[in-house]
Image (cartoon, rainbow, N blue to C red; front, side):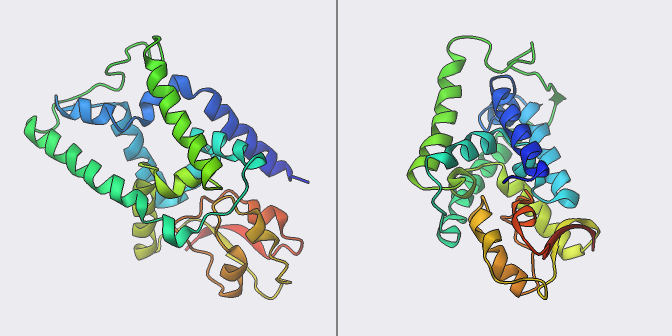
Length: 243
């Protein structure tokens, strides 16, 4: 039975997905390049910057609680709930992210640097999918979310193809170096009964059970969704905020 916290989280990510036709451009990896060609800081540039900054304190909580891709991927769990081999998968998204970032930097450089800030560039009314042809891109993106989930397993897009995750992973790694207070998971291995309920429940296919046993709950692929907390019968895992 889902906890109240998980019901709230599920509602939030589903609402986020429902509004994806409105917010698509705010997450667009293409729009940022189009803006860069003219030296314009667009909505997705601002969004990615905010995701990086939030990760310095909140880790990848955005991925667990607000991401529209999370909503549709977790909805696919009822059809395909296979875990993903994270060690084989996690590095693949960097093959997408690194060349993409290089293109953005080179495009901004060629345009003469940052010249202006236009958050609603290319969609002045604030709604991303505002004409019939825009649905082509919308269904293409959503199709990738669904296809990877159905073919590979739990939140496969987060592991294989997400262009946003690296911003937050880098932010989290910086936090881990300097160790300032932040949202994190903490555990008490003495309470653990090795039931592995936490590992079975993890939507990111991680192994919280082993993390508890090792007294190390830090993993940059963790989206701080709290599933492991809410299924633990002995309260061996909790949220914490601090160093």
